[in-house]
Amino acid sequence: MPKWLKDAIFYEIYPQSFYDSNGDGIGDIQGIIQKLDYVKQLGCNAIWLNPVYDSPFKDAGYDVRNYKKVAARYGTNEDLCELIKTVHKKKMRIILDLVPGHTSDTHPWFKQARQAKENKFSNRYIFTKSVWDAPQEYRLMCGLCERDGNYMVNFFSSQPALNYGFADVKYPDWQLPTDHPDCKATVNALKDIMKFWLDMGADGFRVDMADSLVKNDNTKEATAAIWADIRNMLDEEYPDAALVSEWCNPPVAINKGGFHCDFYLDHIGNGYNSLFRGGSWGDKAFFNKNGEGNIRSFTDEFLSYYEAAKGNGYISLITCNHDTPRLTEYLDEEAIKIAYATIFTLPSVPFLYYGDEIGMRYLKGLTSVEGSYSRTGSRSPMQWCKGKNFGFSESDTTYIPVDSDEKAPTVENQRRKKGSIYKVVKDIIKIRKKHPEFSADGEFEILYAEENSFPFVYKRGKYVVLVNPLDRLADVKFEYEIKSELYRIGEYIQSWEKMTLSPQSFAIIEI
Ligand code: GLC
Ligand code: CA
Image 1 (spheres, rainbow, N blue to C red):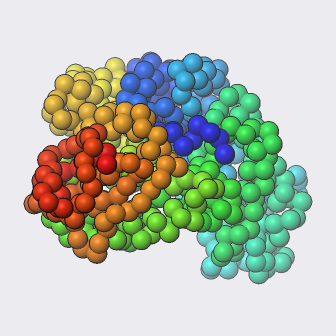
Image 2: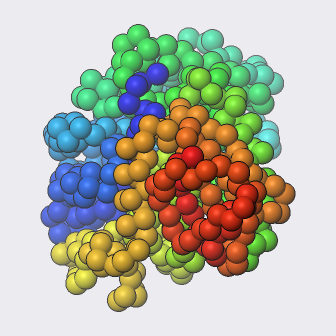
């Protein structure tokens, strides 16, 4: 386990939209280098960089054409190397995005695989035996290749699935078992890509669709076995490198796959979703001030994940990411502050999505850009200051349009504003870093989390955290003596053995 992880606070950078250093309307690596001090000042000590590899951009770079080459629009491999070095100089870490499940259909491997003549890459992807062979249970692209066969896709149609084999081989004439040498070769190719970037200094990877490798793998054990093997490689050769999965199943991803962290993602009906987006458009979210939410939807699931993963790895709570509408779409500003304060004080390795710290809006009604569809609104350019494109770019057009609201929050105005979201994020990160009790492996105990009831109270070592998202008072039995106050949003009063919290409040108290 890389020691740095328990205290890591990640900042997710969507490179297209962070900072454009050369005025072409698209964010780039030199732009990120220029803004590193901003990330550091906020208190984040690690970065997750979305894909920056050569790609035809049918899925914003998650359709990789060359795993070892930085896309020209972001810069060069030398720029990425410089970014990594600069990050390290600032005593921070950076993990890259690894897309193991599929490539672009323009990847040279695929160009070979789709040829009629058998070659070294014929089994790098999953092809049926003939074009007339197209079982409905698989997502197959039919009749597009010279080769007589249909290929399986992993996400969009332009993203053919790499072949790691099948756990349960149903059609032996085209489905290979995972121990087939050609499937092993795919794993080796993946390891080779990882080593390439780790040797350049990368601190690890966020792994895209980590659960998608092996097909017909209901229990996901075969997929996990591949990751466990990769984890062994890391332990032996790169013990400081972190592996973070987009899986959302910590017991499997962490305990079986060997991931150090697993994202707790926004899946309809799950515990994480119930906090911010529960019900219809957040009307039953725990952090919605209307009080229709139920904290147990979160704590029951979170606790089971937490207990299962404890000792082996961490759950990663996110403020949002590039695939999900920003919280501003569901919650008011006060609710967001309390939500973030909670995320950063629960036992987790947290990820802050760029722009969330200033309360950027989810922009509705935008046309899809590079396969973003409904995700476009969460991928708009970072708002740095007032003026042209909010300081993001000198260009007349930007990758995705900037927020059309002139009064949109910017780093500049959020820094000045008393009690802004930015200030809350900065303060709470500072507290988290100063007090090891809040680290990912600090003690954690739930003191009060009852069905449809408020507040939510938990303990991290000697600190008690109280959360009242309601637009009205909430009280709870509280028998401790208050030694000191570490932080608060709103007010609280202790009388007798009861604690009463003001509407939309949050407090950290030393007992
Ligand atoms: C992941 C990424 C998403 C991408 C997809 C396919 O979910 O986060 O942005 O489109 O995988 O690679
Ligand atoms: Ca640029």
